[in-house]
Image 1 (cartoon, rainbow, N blue to C red):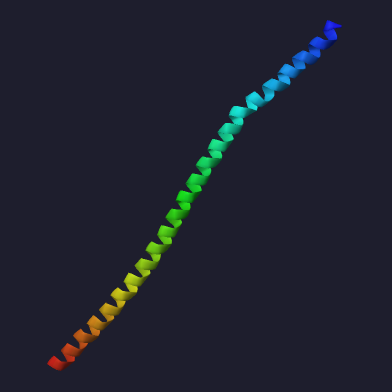
Image 2 (cartoon, rainbow, N blue to C red; image 1 turned 90 degrees about the vertical axis):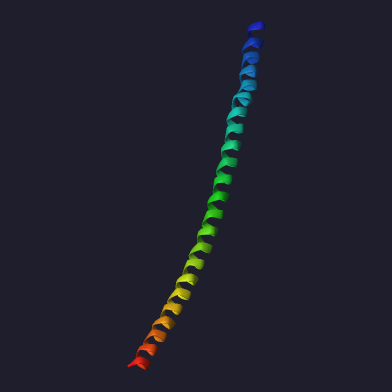
Length: 83
């Protein structure tokens, strides 16, 4: 009779050990997920900053081109006046 109880008892201990073994793995998964979310958030901020920088660069280039265009017109106008 003890033999029939013993295997069931051992199996219960093995099943009880399973969640304990999965616990650290689950915790590792949670930490990994948190790290991945943090990295994605950081990358999203970088992407937003890049888009802002690209827009600012485009605006500055347009302003430079406008100034250079006006500068060449002014230079051209002064040359024609001198001739």
